[in-house]
Length: 498
Image (tube, rainbow, N blue to C red; front, top):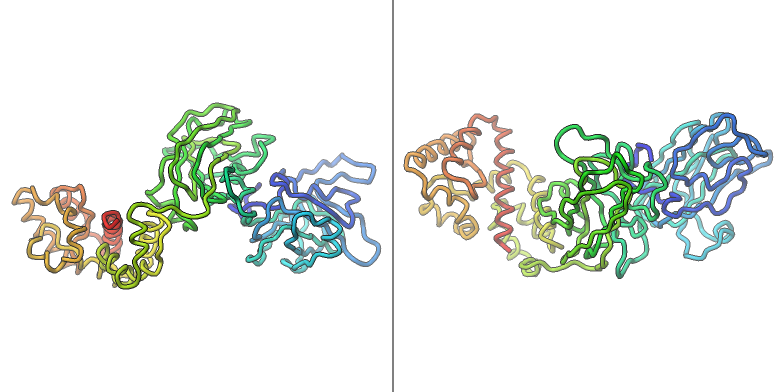
């Protein structure tokens, strides 16, 4: 699939997913099944058939009577459609001037004739102009799950490909299955690079016919590695995984690893930033053009997996086999927190961070499906606050190197959670403590709040060095640095809270 406006969504109509062309008013020049091919359309100038010029697409004859042509298609997997591409590649003097799309949700076993004559269709794209020889992208209203499409062209002509980009919504999945399969609703949430091959190819049901049918990143010249994050179609406990480098010979990854996380409906940015990913499979050497199975001893379910390739390269397919679960799991301490409500729950969160609006919004966001969801929500809500909230949270921190005994009463609510955060000060030299207190006083006078640093594991000397490095920052920049340190502190306190 080429780069387009709907990258990251699944082509629900693709023949690779089982999409089928069922019935058409006319396909005299080129067969309707071509519409759903995964390959890019090609043009062969010297190739003809008994009916005329060979074309890589669906093409009806020239209409000499009233009406228009149409084609009914079955999606490979039911889903919500976000947008379509009506591709008229290579159709220049014979493309349709206009097209529209209808959709329906029909039960299994509905015949093509019933779809034509009896089923109620809903228009999802009104008559829209098409450009010749090009992609024609259109957004469509989301909200309903569809099983079939009807492409209407006015009055006749040729269309090379129809792509229906969206989110799979299959029937309920249970038992042991491929949790990541696109047929079960699996889809790619994010990917570091898919220059040569779309990462959603990893989740297709059949083995790829060529190297172009897999996921492949460009050659990585610098540090780091490539990765792709997959939202599983259904949460589950992983039993074994299958990685297939079919057709990748001189360009397969040197090593692969797999991580997982349980965070239902996780926002993508928060998911990528989360430190709560758990190792499913450690870095493992890969081999060329081979399908390999790895046994996994996972004890908890996951909603997402992240496939890492080191440093880059191509993988054809990934299967994540496991037992589907229809509800979350209870982590130690989280069930007790989720049982709290209202003011009592807010009070617990205030012990972790002194911003009142943050604590209120955290209480409103409860219950939390997992520790990853709790921590991710905490970070997301924190960065949606403003300067007033951040400064309010800062007031709940004693000055670094200050007289902790004198401030204990003022900060009694957070004392049990913060008692070890400044442990690095306890054994410091007197001169270091004196300078630390002096520098903090100057910092407070300049910025209006005490110096905030996640002090866990740091010595007094390290904290003093950090304070000196930050004391000349511009006020707006320093505020963001301090807010980031507060976020680290809050994360640690949430862990202690449970």
